[in-house]
Every structure is written in structure tokens, then in C-alpha cells.
Image 1: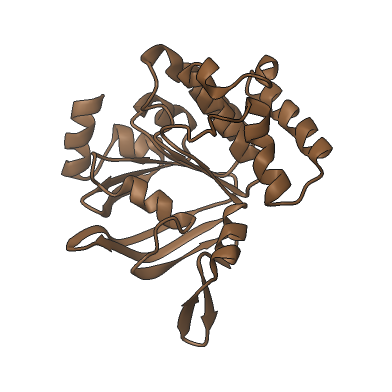
Image 2 (image 1 turned 180 degrees about the vertical axis):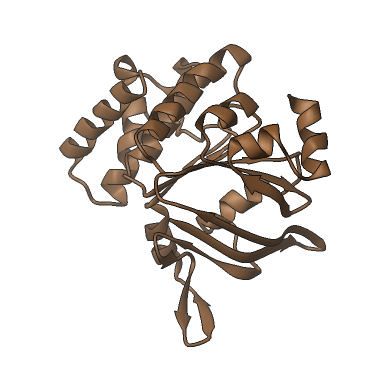
Amino acid sequence: MVDIRSVRKSFGALTVLKGIDLQVRSGEVTVVLGPSGSGKSTLLRTINHLEKVDQGVISVDGTLIGYRRSGDRLYELPEREVLKQRTRIGFVFQNFHLFPHLTVEENITEAPVSALKRPRKEAVENARGLLARVGLADKAEAYPRQLSGGQQQRVAIARALALEPKLLLFDEPTSALDPELVGEVLDVIRDLAGQGTTMIVVTHEIGFAREVADNVVFMDDGRIVEQGPPADVLDRPQQERTRAFLSKVL
């Protein structure tokens, strides 16, 4: 589903991604761990072309993201085509990014109606089904400011699902939440994992990674240091840098 090849990304003199190679199969959950500044969030943002790569290529479901190939050369796609690609890649941000002036239902229906040209009645019915799925069936008419952080993040997940994406990206979805609200968001992600949703999750929740991930990736200094099944990476890490990180967070 996701094929990342030799991806490099710099911001000025700072190289953030230093040749990333990563593959994610359809239906798999990949959890990305690592210290702050290791490049985890930047990697996620390159997958849907929120950040343009300097070198390398990324494909999702066989489609090159952000570029088209002509012979041996790559040409960047027009913004309208990039936006169309993004409708197939759901992104759940750390700080929710809900529209404060729209109700919960309107937040979820906006993209299907405007981007996918879905009939509003169909979009509303789908939104209500998604709200029930994330345990918020009674919040359709509420505004984001009337919700807890955990509820807002669950709305953000429902909004991402409304576009029926092939891939879901989560950028530290629980880091902005009070500790007692973390569980309700992780429960929704667990449910998605159980239904075979392809996901890449950047998180510091080691217990969640152990329980849900098919593959754990540990990043440091812009590189993938180690990756494999949770039992290998979390319980029997081969690299000293992985062991040092886990000793501080477990």
C-alpha cells in the first residue's frame, strides 16, 4: 500500500530525513517511534505531499504521490491533482484542526461535499454513521469548543474516514490530550485496526504499539534505526540506540 524509497528532506541546512526506505502492506498498522526531532512527523507529511521530498519517491496503492513520471524524469503535479490524491490519504493531526465555526456534523461533511461532490444528504447520513462508530452519535450539532480534547480527536478521525481513504496517517494523536482522555482515542484506533484499516501511527504510546502494530519502526536522527514486529523491536531490540530509547520510555 505504501512504498517509500530513498526519501530525503532538508529544511535549509538541516537534513531531517536521510534516506528513508519503508514499505507498508495493505491492512497493516505500522507504528513509528522515536525521540523528538527524529523526523517522524516530517515523514508522515511527505506521504501526502504536505512536505515535498528533495530526493526519492513515495507511492500509495501504486500511485506516485505528488509527481508524475515521464521517462527518467519526475514532474511535480499541479496542486489540484495533489489535493485529489490527498482525499485518498486521511491525516489525523496532533491538535485536531477542526473548523471552530462549523458543527461536528458540518466538519465531517465539508470535504465529501466540496472535494468529492457527494450529495449533502448522503454526506450527512455517512457523517452520522461515522459519529456513531466513534461513540459520538449525540454530538452532531455541537461545536468543537463544546467538546473535550478526546471527543475532538474522535471527530477528527471521523472526518478523515468520511473521505473513505485507502490509508490513514496519525501524527501523535494523543499527545495533546489529558491522560484520562487518551484511552478513548486509542480505542477508536484499535477498532480501525481490527477492521483492517491500513495505518501509519506516530506515537509515544508503547503499550498501544505492542498491542496493535504489525510493524514497529524506530527512527532517530532522520534515519530508520530498526524495524520489525513489536515483539522483536520492543522486547528484543538489536540496536543500542533502540535499547537506550526504550529504557527511558518503558
